[in-house]
Length: 67
Image 1 (tube, one colour):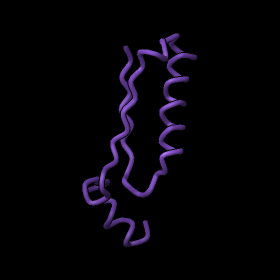
Image 2 (tube, helix red, strand yellow; image 1 turned 180 degrees about the vertical axis):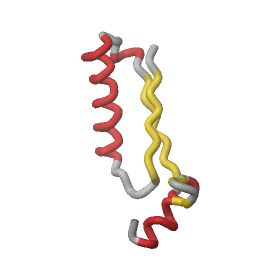
Image 3 (spheres, rainbow, N blue to C red; image 1 turned 135 degrees about the vertical axis):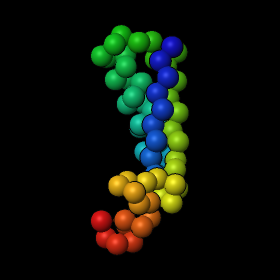
């Protein structure tokens, strides 16, 4: 039973976009590894930009600066 965990910043991904991610990850595992879609679990975690850091800074700080 494959388990896929997708982490994205919480910035307004729509329900439709998340459904496409779930479907796409499921199909990829089926096509590449022959995994059964019925037993494939996909979880999307949305993380606040204050809680996601790159290079010692939060994404919020980097985006405010224009990076």
